[in-house]
Length: 448
Image (cartoon, rainbow, N blue to C red; front, top):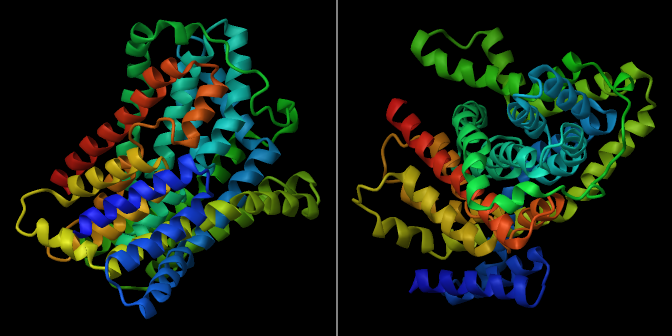
């Protein structure tokens, strides 16, 4: 019965969003109330459960998420992302142009959210495709692969950040393991699959793309920050969080005590501290150092946060539904079903996230709902690696992007593809990211 109620809740969510065109946040809250009551929760506890889910989810990640958005916007508005992309493409050369786009998009994608990365990079790869007389899709697929993989696997992106917090996983370790998993995944999906896709949907590779889509401010290369400082600024939060994670990994092995240096590294490697320090660095390197007024920089930060408002509410709404599933006993029911099961918690988390992603469209909502179903089942499993469960959830949330996903339409329109071509390229590609992510996460699970 509890699983039937969840299925009806998911179906209602789909109907509200797709048929009645209700706002996603409003739909999530309505469904949270319906599911809570249907699960037999006492009426006086329903509102408290929803509020604690919404507040608990946003309480931990809003700071990381907000400052991550501001950091990305500062780098983009200063032309730093543009400099990184153009320089790497020049260095790799015409023959390895797809590798150049993949590498540049991966680095830019660490700092920028999926939609922002696509909007920023499409005009760049459009001009390169035009100059080299190659299809926009040939360069666009490596770009969207890197953007999708960083979005699914790497903090400070919303999905991995939120789910790591919900599982109580170490965000620094999620970042390190995420990079290890993402690198082979993007090679499979972004370099190898497009060669096969050219045979499956050859017409897609004749497309010129939409020149006007997402065109942003144009930069003269000499007016942008240097490549080295742009790269360092974009990767600074990664460096700091990785330092903190490395200390956590080696301390038990080497057995050294918590001296002042270890405490300091842990402090600056904490995800919230790392994002704050990275934002302050970006204010200097992308702005003050180049004599850009502080007001202009703060306008960039404000516009980044303004764009985030609804997304933060949607994440909170997903957290509310997650909490209702836990408080209503669904998580315990699922845990009982899988008690004594030989199924890997990594695979179970991936499977639940994948099903929810296909149904709901939003990867972020899928990860949060997955957490509500998976968390109780983890309690009875000794020595489970929470970081890998978080990664598997992120991988599952990337699967089969199709018509209920805003990112699908964004990719389709920006690369100028028909619906059939978008299914044959981006839908399959996103599935390869999800499946490869699971395979490499399971391999990591065997090793560590």
